[in-house]
Length: 327
Image (cartoon, rainbow, N blue to C red; front, top):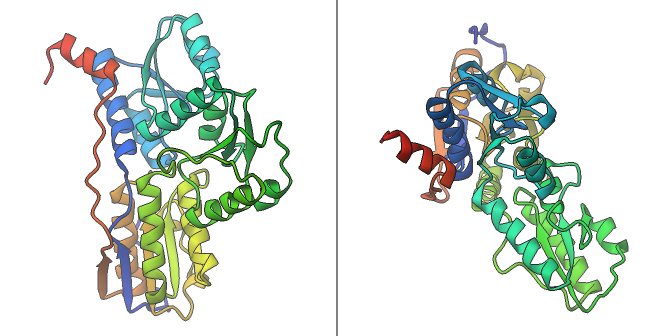
């Protein structure tokens, strides 16, 4: 990114959320694509963006990954990676019919929700799936048991949804939702359906929760919050919503160049965080711009929790590594 000229606007302090950027599922997904390119050769096809971040996708594309939405774009017999968001069984069946060699990079926390859906459907539960119906993760989960699932996206829908048997009902959630919004939706559903069964363990992923809690801790200290993330990144959009719900202006940006001077008028302390798919290099790009353009002298990190989670590589990659003799 080309350096920008100094602005008339000056900011005293930048506060960074220490819990930010890549989660364990994203780290794993990126490594899957990079390993596949090394072990399988080019090209390797990926259904949907491996994660929702243009910078990361473009970097992987340069290395030989080909991103597709329709499996008809993938030549028969090619290597195909499923993105971290997961797919339904119809997509798996189509891939197998085309004799594609599948590597599944679905986040293990998304897989957990899929398995819960399958188990509940086998016991003939009506499953309320709390999520955004047009998000690729929700579409994939819904595909596991469409005849048993009803999607609820907000409190209004929770108030009006009709279920066939209120005595046998459970709920699951998309992994990247707002904690507060989900809590409100669940409260309505529990009031209307006292027999509602929750997931065995909270479906909203640890990284989503940690990043939202970090924003809540930052809010009393900042005048505006910038969130690095893609427009189609659910967890990034939720971070903006959390700040706005507490009365703090918030803006979603993909790169430092997206920052507008008018957002920062009257701002003394700027907050900065990033969604679970945003690489650290883009955070540092914003830090550099804050220093060069807005004269920020003090940069502080706000620590809330330490993340130590790690997910192992999928079985397909492990086998490829073993067969190749690579470390």
